Image 1 (cartoon, helix red, strand yellow):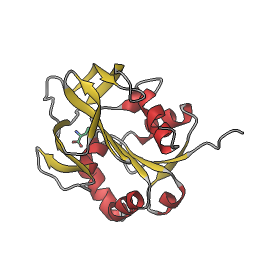
Image 2 (cartoon, rainbow, N blue to C red; image 1 turned 135 degrees about the vertical axis):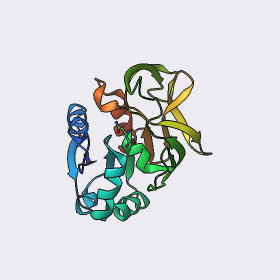
Image 3 (cartoon, rainbow, N blue to C red; image 1 turned 180 degrees about the vertical axis):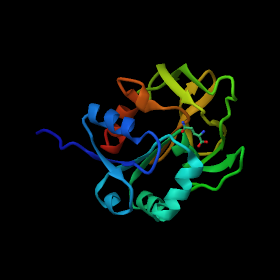
Length: 198
Ligand code: GLN
C-alpha cells in the first residue's frame, strides 16, 4: 500500500520558508505553512527556517508560537531548525546574547564566520543513515557556529571537525541551509525519522 504523504509544517513568518517547502515537495512530503499555533495540530514536524533570528523571535512572541512550539514538541512533534531556526532552538545564543526557545542543548555564536566570508558553500560530511559519513554540500549564509554540544546531543554533520548538523531525540539543528542543496539528502533522512524508519 502506498504511504500517505506526510504533512510537515514550515514556520512561515519570515525568512526562506519557500525554499524548505520546495525541498519538502521534492521529497514527496506536503509542506504546511505555519503562521499561527493552529496548523501544528495537524503536522508531524515543524521546520524553523533561516532568516533573521531577532525578527523571528519577535514574531514568535506576537503569534504565541513561542509557547505553542515547545508544547508541540512535548506532545511528540519533531523540530528542525536551520540557521536562524537553530539559533531559535539553541539553549545559549551569543554575539549578541539573545533569548531563545532553549529546546536544544547547544550553545551558538551568531554570524560567526565574519564579514569576509559571510556566505560560502562548504564541502562537509553527513552520515546519511547513521553509517559512514559521505560528502555533503553545505551552504552557509551569515551562519552561526555551534560552540558547545550538550550531553545527549549527537553530531551527524561536520565541516572539517566542526559540528554543523546535530540532533537530540526529536530535535534537529543545522548551521547551514540544507534546503539549498539538491537532492535534499538531509531532508530525506529527517523525514525518514519522522516516519519512524530509523
Ligand atoms: N545571521 C542570522 C541571524 O543571526 C541567521 C542567518 C540565516 O538564517 N541565514 O539570525
